[in-house]
Length: 102
Image (cartoon, rainbow, N blue to C red; front, side, top):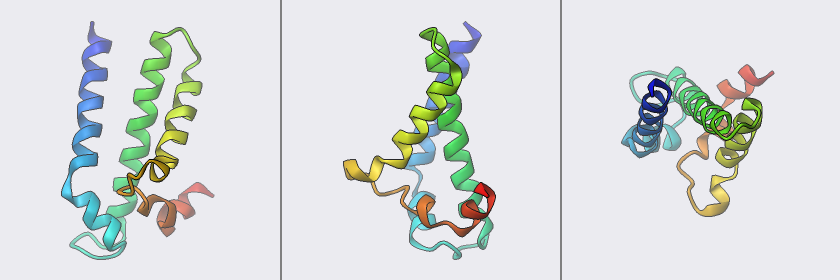
């Protein structure tokens, strides 16, 4: 019961993050706004980690390995531009995320 509530909150949070106008601002200007270059990096990390957690929870419910859910949700986020959703395109060009990935 508690896991379903946590999963619901995570899904709702992910929808709020994706629908938030700050995503468009971060996508439009990687270093602008009040937070400087740190805000898009933190925003990207929140999106990636939330999607991984949602994928983990869903795949554990289906009796599959948790890492499989994390990988599939990561691949889905990476390929959203192919479906016409370009709001997360700033994640591909973010220098801060590239540094953290290495």
